[in-house]
Image (cartoon, rainbow, N blue to C red; front, side):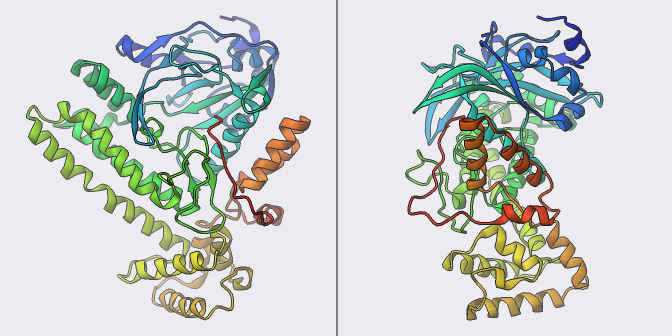
Amino acid sequence: MTNSKAMTEAGWNLDNSYARLPESFFTTLDLNPVRAPKLIILNKPLAASLGLNDEALQTTEGAELFAGNQIPEGSLPLAQAYAGHQFGHFNMLGDGRALLIGEQITPKGERFDIQLKGSGRTPYSRGGDGRAALGPMLREYIISEAMHALGIPTTRSLAVVTTGETILRETAQPGAIMTRVADSHLRVGTFQYAAEWGTVDDLQALADYTIKRHFPELESDENRYLSLFQEVIKRQAALIAKWQLVGFIHGVMNTDNMALSGETIDYGPCAFMDTYDPETVFSSIDRQGRYAYGNQPNIAGWNLARFVETLLPLLHDNQEQAVEVAQETISDFPDLYRSNWLTGMRNKLGLFNEEPEDETLIEGLLKLMQKYRADYTNTFRALTFDKLEDTVLFGKDEFEQWHELWQARLARQQEPKASSHELMRNSNPAVIPRNHRVEEALEAAEKDGDYEVMERLLDALSSPYAHSPEQVKYTTLPEASARPYRTFCGT
């Protein structure tokens, strides 16, 4: 522990409520220091919202903390145990290269996990080195901050430090550690771990902790565990709809990567879709398309089914009645998701009210986009600003017919066209973290130590609905390539 002036002034106000769960849920750890930590990037707005002093964090002591060489007062470093279905196969897992240093209590009384990712081996490392490379850590920083700016619930990135060490993956890469901020790291997999290897008392303790931390309004409910499941369903239905609306593909929706808080978590082989195609897959290991863009809602429902299976002992003393309640409740998810998605798509098309034919109108556009390989983001951007010539759909008879139907639909609502335009501006981003732009930033950082490319990209992504002239260069598509874009589980 350090009691340096810089650390005292940093504003750390840590609690360790997770460590008050049964000991089987975690392992406390000693630090695993690195040779030469250097702060690469600090998220100053996030630091301020956490009640932290960014000047104190930008010192040598700050870099030492972000590297796991030192810890602030009040920290109790631990690795969390959890399980999970990985591509449908159940495994015992856990924080194999992450360290929860504590929960920061903000000046507003909010609680956030502070986790070091890439901090070294833990009992859950399963043969891995526990370290992380610079590229994947910067990748998570960029995309998680872009997701936040898009208004999508997500874990966030506070800082990235290089370690002065070389990490061996496919090639030798510079080592790095990222500081992740999350509402919590409670996962579906955490409950799967409790159900498989814990007692019912352990499971109940975890459920009560989850309710107290994320859903305190449920504590007095007659069946608070059923209410917990219902709230998790609602949050996931809203989250997955937001993913679909911006063309985000998580890439590895294992049950250990579904956070009960409703945040997007674990940015591994994630990417954003350019050409609209529901079968789009970027992950190098998803050879069957299990986690394809169009399959994400179905997988979310599958993951929720695995979650409620763990809750059965808490839902009812009678197993059959518990199953009946669970099945009845989970059946709400598809409709909740669809409702969220339809509302978002109406917003993207400037529609304020609902008509029965809206779903046909929306699906009609998507089918045209798929048929003519239209860019997802730029097509909606072209519709927003009535620049139809900017899309490959322009001049197609089918699209002209669809456009007439859309214009007639707009004319039937009370709101003026200016209001629809404003709604579309606020619902259709000008920029997303285009895969080629992210790779460009990572290459400059990894090969040349040039972080300006990344900083300019982050600046453009920070206000995705601004539609400013400065963002135009980030809307361009990558050059055509015979090789499909692939992402890897490097985080």
